[in-house]
Image (tube, rainbow, N blue to C red; front, side, top):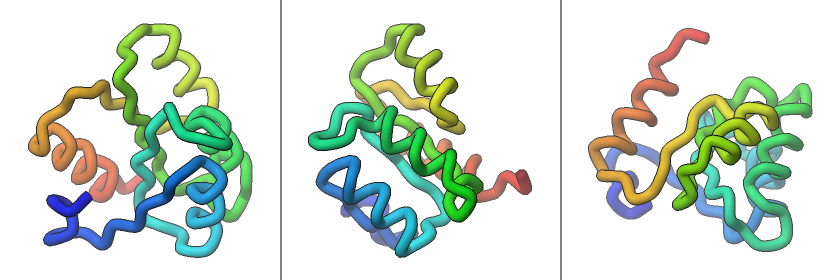
Length: 105
């Protein structure tokens, strides 16, 4: 996140519960969410965010070290807008961020 701090305001969450809370309080332009998080995993946090009228329009990009199709399918089912598999380069991450922040939808 320190690499992104030059161009973006980055707000971190230590777990899925905190991510949901931050989504409601801060209404970020984009959420980058790891699938593997304590308390509430990324799938469930994404589902809560995407099924709440106040946060459902926030794009959620799932980040994971697991690249199996099943996980990509589940990410789509819970409403994720995108999916990046680790490891990824800073350039790949910035391209994904820019794609979602400039998309008119």
